[in-house]
Figure 1: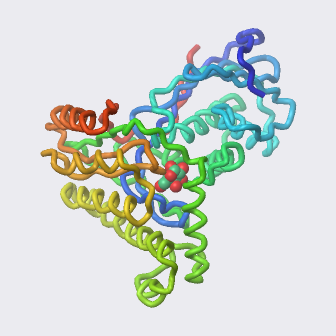
Figure 2: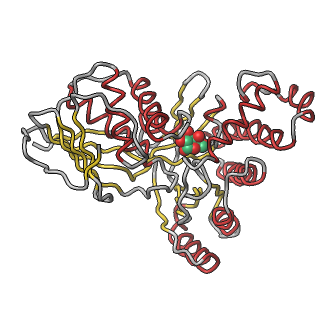
Figure 3: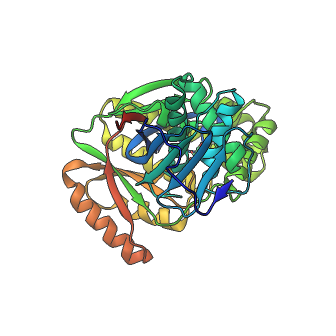
Length: 379
Ligand code: GLA
């Protein structure tokens, strides 16, 4: 249940703590997670903060500084999905722990965030993981991290109607400072890849176009991939070898063929990018980012004119190695790999040129690879 205003701080006991959960940027490996492929995200130095106070009753009252509606939940009752609203992410996670028979005590939470909502930086997964971390802190026990991440993914499927893959929740749960996370979405095997940031830095550029995954295109891509896998008689597109592609690729309907082409090449690019990262070969890494963007724009068709414009502008700015859309697409952010000592000029130039061509003032920020959720006692 969501109420316009709620009476906070009535039955509060002293157990204040602060949960911080980062957002993520995906360096490469886009739309591969739900095809059992490879992804390479990293947590960023922006995220969600949730200040939590325990209550002596069984009510959960959750407010976000960015939203008018507060979430008001009676934890003695089963929680079920309702119409889409920001609070569904919180409710979905609470419901997940309820389904595991956890007795969640009442609490109040106030949320603040410096992640752009709809920016493709996983503000939803950050909220889910912040909620999960708060619940586990309140209950003084914890789920194995993989189960926690999967519970959050399930919450997003059931309560937000987005059939997302596992990348975002894993990227946040398992994030290590200074590292990107290579995740094999077929086996859930993870490798932390050191990101040598002595001479380069990651730049995130918000196109200012809000992306919305629940509006159907994301689910459509997923369904097309399933159709293509059935056509090729493989359990997932991860299993399409070059040999199978050479033999059967031309028999696929044109559109499905383009989707498969993206998947095969994006998996290869992701592994090649990891090798480039390990060798601090920024030029190669940058080329792979541009190639990834082209494939997402032309074959997978999940970019938009504004993201294409950012990538096109970045391409000719000195000091930029590579740039691509990041996340689900259809708006949101681009990510660029740039020379650290030219970061300031690059940001000024990109901002000015994008503003001139699109009329939108983009928000840009630099980030290193951050760590996962943390809990800080407040008293
Ligand atoms: C969204 C989803 C992820 C992933 C990306 C695309 O962020 O939540 O699971 O599919 O899109 O790579």
